[in-house]
Image (tube, rainbow, N blue to C red; front, side, top):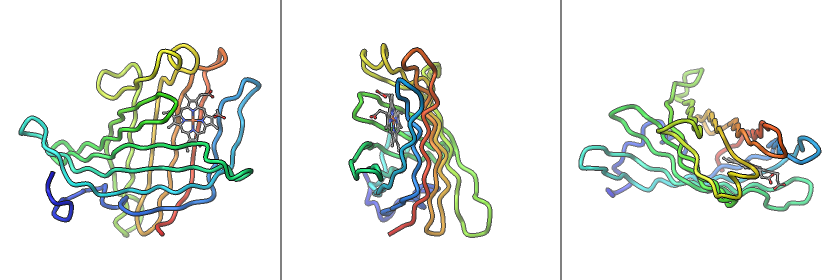
Amino acid sequence: MSDENEIDYGPLKNLIGVWKGSSGVDVAPERDGPEDNPYYETITFTAVGDVENAESQVLSVVRYHQVVQRKSNDETFHDETGYWMWDPKTKTVMHSLVIPRAVCVLAGGNYTGAKGDKGGVVLEVAASVEDQDWSIIQSPFMQANARTTEFRHKIEVGDGHLSYLETTIVEIYGKVFEHTDENELVRV
Ligand code: HEM
């Protein structure tokens, strides 16, 4: 890895820092129907440098940790970690994530400029169990009982503001459930 101060993080540069937001809405699966959970959270994005793969691909890397608390009781009910990676040669944005339900995702996509002239970006990545490249790995229990089949994540970030919408498709309780999470955060 090179010194992180010399790295060009491309569109990921906007993410680096600590973000907080308290207007989160989670729609989660329960046996008797969807449950809405208002939440607040902190997401910490840390620049960690770059990596070289097979002496030909160089990725710049940002690590993150997301801690989400339920407004009703302040309980931490979602903890997620992973990396955002940028490949400047192919202009590919990659997002790896792990959640402690024994589910891992490697999503891929790209970015566009955000509306307005403040240099913001929209990062958009997706993964699917059907996709050979950008896919989902989960434990045998989750495969059998709460199988994640698709994941889509769109983040708009710039000018001290970050908003996201994340959709996770889960097969659970004999149904296909659209599990969504969205929030708006500010850099602190
Ligand atoms: C802000 C982000 C998220 C929040 C707040 C959240 C919250 C929740 C909640 C409240 C449940 C219902 C079960 C429970 O009460 O624990 C749930 C279920 C689930 N979530 Fe999430 N989730 C988030 C993101 C994700 C992501 C990114 C994935 C996977 C890519 C995921 C996969 C699942 C799965 C597979 C279940 C079904 C397990 C079950 O209900 O027993 N979630 N989530």
